[in-house]
Length: 254
Ligand code: SF4
Ligand code: SF4
Image 1: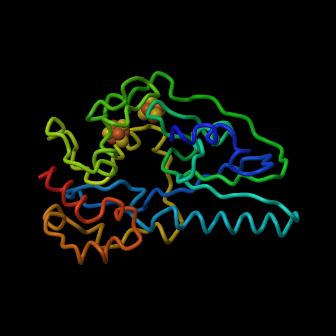
Image 2 (image 1 turned 90 degrees about the vertical axis):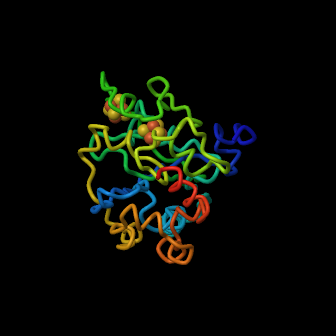
């Protein structure tokens, strides 16, 4: 990230002659969730990997801009390139960055992917909205690993998402018993956020969970084989941990 810092601040280093950043949100809040007696995975990971789904949508959008307006150059970004996506989304008035460091909206909460199109077309721009966290501290109080070290500051190295997805080695023993059954990512600080009462189910079929996933009990997770993993999580973000990472996480939770 450090190497990309200039680019994160200056979109013209990413797209020559860029003039506008178009920030977009895509809902992933699922209609159905996992069984109560199950190890949990983050809701964003229920369906097909969002990088694949959103890249296609962004390409379509750019194409339709080009068809409507003419010669416009641009580049699509979904979480993978060096772009300050939450900051751009907040600057464009899509929401505010809450004390849990997620982008929040008053209308629909925070279960949204953020993406950008950076283009060389001058557009009218929207302005930032205001912060509506107020005196609430629900996310800070609920984080089981105390990763939200101060309002708006999450220590990534203490977050369950880091331990269960990014970390390649063993999970430190001092974290034992603190993961509240989260086996891939963690949604606690979003689930407790009062603004997420306004979440509505998404309408993107590719984000629908494999029915097998929703019916898996703890025992099923503990007994999952690599072959089943490959079928149930084909094209899923869970492939990031690979089967061995998921097994490590489940063993840690047992
Ligand atoms: S995702 Fe979970 S572990 Fe990470 S900050 Fe939020 S509540 Fe804490
Ligand atoms: S739980 Fe409360 S403090 Fe945390 S992000 Fe939501 S509104 Fe803000």
